[in-house]
Length: 338
Ligand code: AMP
Ligand code: MN
Ligand code: MN
Image 1 (cartoon, rainbow, N blue to C red):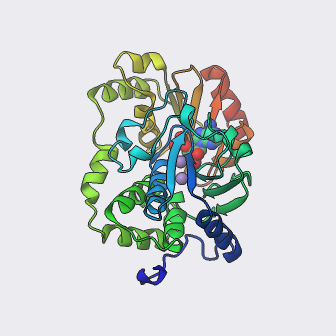
Image 2 (cartoon, rainbow, N blue to C red):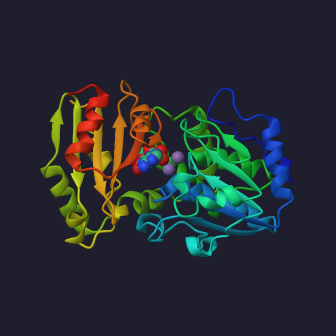
Image 3 (spheres, rainbow, N blue to C red):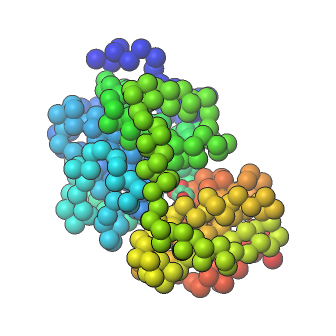
């Protein structure tokens, strides 16, 4: 079946850090498993959920029993990702296998980022980690980890290809959601020729890219504009840092779930005068989920790692249980902008 794909997909990095022996080990583990438990990071984005569901489709077509989940306390697929096919694979964290024979994780740099289902990593017999975070801790028993890949979806495509799967419309939809999410619609510096080549393969399956774009970015409820207005009303620019925050009280006034405010960083980061953008978002538990973006000079991935989080050089985040002022103060001290 494998030679059915004429042009083999290429990875993002010029030289992949994933050895052939590692790919073979992953393929062997998958071949030997009847049931495979998939997982992606909490508050899943298009790359996390898209990579996981795409791989789930390929595994199911090989006759595997597949379950997938993410470990949020309030388990719900973010509204803007509900158009992704394959959601019948999903189970809430309480129904997730406590000790899977084979577990596969997607777009998660650590077991901790799997939230409530993180403990299954330690209990699983084998864990294949599919990820592109430079901050990946090296958890799991087989690491399909390439920081040069623009999205985990690129590694998932490679894996599906090596499994002998074909890109059908469902798989392509899920992978495309991952690719456009993480490359910022092919605008970010991570966008390689390989990312565009992959997009061409996906679009060739007959994807309606306009419909996917509308689902991902143009279906916000009216309340989003009101909450955005509140966040923008308090935005501050100081020493090339632009930042603001969104509280759960802001959201409650319009019944807006947390996942709806994830995109505010993409508006705040447009500020020409700022090198770094930060948005603090209060989640339903009262913790601050902090999104940071850099235009390239500052390594926000390293700064966020120092704050207990992680991510990429130009897009990273961390969680804070301190006040807004204390959190932004600590971040600014690290940034050297105080
Ligand atoms: P976001 O701002 O949520 O879009 O996240 C940007 C990047 O930072 C992603 O690669 C996330 O995986 C990473 N990230 C965000 N929040 C955290 C966190 N609390 N801990 C570790 N990594 C994070
Ligand atoms: Mn992600
Ligand atoms: Mn990703």
